[in-house]
Image (cartoon, rainbow, N blue to C red; front, side, top):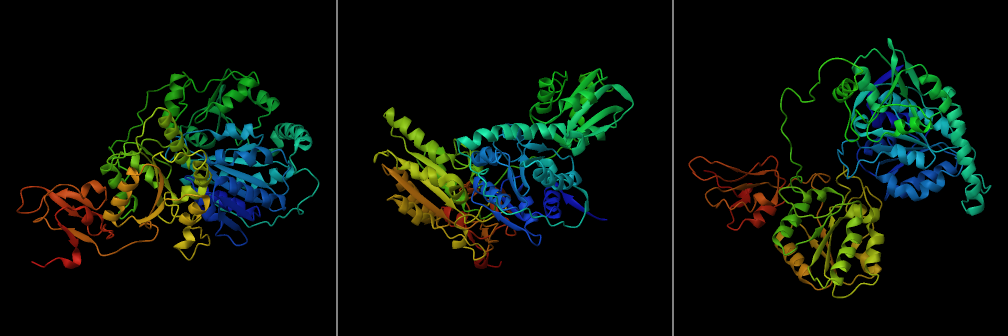
Length: 596
């Protein structure tokens, strides 16, 4: 059997392929981006990054209706966007196998919250699988499609950030083709009240059947230790950390975390004096045991937030009096240097934030994307970040509240092009509802021609700039069609012209939209002639440093007492913003440098 080293994401994609999967959809969001990128490389697979998670889910639902095995992947908060069709789809019987991958993010590595989507899966009456390593991820993906078709249920595979990106050895097998019969036109997919009422009982019976068949489904595993007093119940990545400790304690590894069979759990736990549940985030398994009347401990000793690891589990078991030894420190022997998140060299967002810092904008409402960095030092200009596309509606709400209080302070709202297409368009349509001419709102659409933060995937307008993409929506034309009268396009790299327009629009007593256009330097591999600093002219005012570009720093030059600006020419992509903000012309193209 062939073996490969794979990430958890790659392993899920491989399991989808081996199971005969044909349609894979997603909206890019860490930690699950790599699943679709890996899946669509396989022959016979149709893969797409859809405009948002709801659309991605709906495309996969259509594939399942038509009898082919379909998978949709998204980060945990993406399930919130997809919830409307999901909560109805789970009432219907699946045709082709259907799997939803939820990438949860304990520790908030790249997310605005830390929700535990096992709760969402139960809420939606879905079977929930929780893999522990890459081999599990592949095997569970294959098993999920079989279970989906056998029990006519959508299946959630809940995977966490560290498992998504960590690597381990995976046994690779051949693909098995699988196509169910075509779409059945029998009314079971028409969720109007008469059918939906029956569907509630269908869901209840389906969940009970899954629970009853726990042992034949065979995804849970009891591993015997040498002590019969204590049983650890765990799942997912915490299982791996428990094994690292080498404890002489029995361990029940749950691969299927919902539904749990009461009779099965009672049979397994009988005879133990103490049941310890080790799980990340919410006490999901612990609460399920409590509903069964089975006493257990867990969150009393293990954190409700962040990631668990072998050290925190050791310390929790020590506090519970279940093992002996000393408290372990989680600190590394060698200190690590924190890396401040920065905009990339040549990022078109940097001049916008520099302009806003110098403007009269006292309130800036941010959104999700690379420009979220605007809330951090040294920029520190954004005052709100909630969710994808929320900035537009929030801005309207603030403006209305201020108007009621007779406050006329201007508000600036930020949204990226990817986020605009994801969920911003309905909010922009709503802006015109009961809008007053005097309400000062300036909306900056930062159009860098890609979905940059997740790796440069396409969006609804990328085809205007990239011949490889087939979506060509023009943002300005769309906004004008909606009914906006004051829509202005600017080149973000033309600093002075952009600054004048933004300042003018902030001062305009009404609603205006500025589309700031400039390609993502990383995605489009921008590399123009770099710049250098002439230290004899530089006055060390730090105007260039404040643009927050990685190649720029202050340094000591030979023969000059005062520190001056400098540019790492290997990092510089030649965007020219620093040269445009320099008040004395000390920053020049390296091709203009005079040899000494």
